Image 1 (cartoon, rainbow, N blue to C red):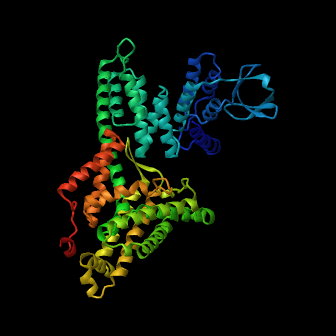
Image 2 (tube, one colour; image 1 turned 30 degrees about the vertical axis):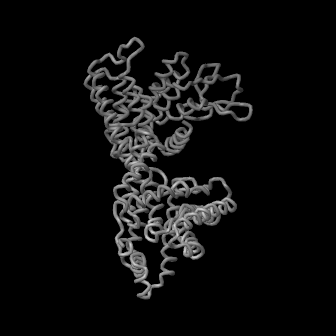
Image 3 (cartoon, rainbow, N blue to C red; image 1 turned 120 degrees about the vertical axis):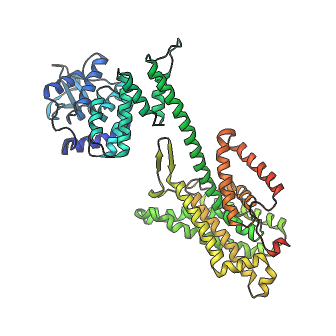
Length: 552
């Protein structure tokens, strides 16, 4: 409510007091009608107050806005001497009183001379709806849509004519949809014509929002004696059908959302696994420190963002463009150091490699804890990755996950180009398929191994950049993805990047489809069991890497 009132205050004060309602009807309500409605705000009866509020909201007069705003904020008073309604503002020990319609100062009085007009939560909701009606015809589409939403929640009968006027001149599709929904809610609540109410139900059935479902559920409900709340059988039947239709649509939208979440999870797994597909799948190295290379990329992102926050705050939106190559270099150089310092002495000894890299992962975690501390670090989203896009009512897709999907596919495309179209890719494939023959042709296999391991490690660092936008950056970041990454590589086919792509998206989507039914933990267990059974039938995975040394 505070956020809305802040926006509304800015709009009303600037737009109404300085420029006026550019799009409101040119003829304001006559002073006698407005004065009568303002006086009604001080009525003793609750219903009389509501009638006065609705009359002001339906007037379309710009002068009604400050009065209702003052009332909802508790700044509307009555003068004890003549019961006149005024807007009061405390200045020191006295109240400065202003005329409600002109806002001109009229007197300065002590607190004992005035009485505050009290409002409760129900009245505040009605006032917000009335204020929304006043904003329906403004020039700001954001304000118009917010006003339509507030009118929908208030659903006062007097807002119907104002909504019809606003709809007649509305060109913005999103705002028009919100206004049609609000008008349908008003008609369903207050209209007496059965056909008009059924038409309103059909309009509301197009919206899958929780407020709409709550409204329809109220009408379809039964009282304590088991009798329907809605007396009109035709309207009640239409509402029940609309609810069934909404539930079917929501089930479909939830399925679409789960698929999107699965694709986004698959993109995360792809980024984490594609580097592993090179170091483990291509080189045959079981690198248990791969997750820590992902973590190094995430902390590199944090460090880059700290530099931007402190030195270039205005360019923070570009921090990720610097963080991606920086993370690739940091993790890549760390990978080369690991290969030259440890791995090259352990080729052909998988158990020793596993133990050595596992110990290295613990060392890297402790080093990061020592430098950055054990708590999570704040990594922000740039503005172009913040927010979401509403595909349809009930289906929101977040920008950060959309960008991660795009980023993961772009990284995979660049890797494929590197492997298929460059000299380094040719040498790497040659060493992978037949090391002895490649060495006899003059290829420096040791250097190729180091650069290949560095490439896989650098890609892991880029995965850390992406993960920092959707997950906590902590020393344990990589541990959450290392097992899933191995599963993706083994399931897709050891060393096959296309298999890694298919495996990542398959596991991601299956996980998200299973989670609503069985829970997150059991879903992972079922996926693991399914992969074990699958590997029993296809030990090389979906797409087996072919080569002389592999096939021999």
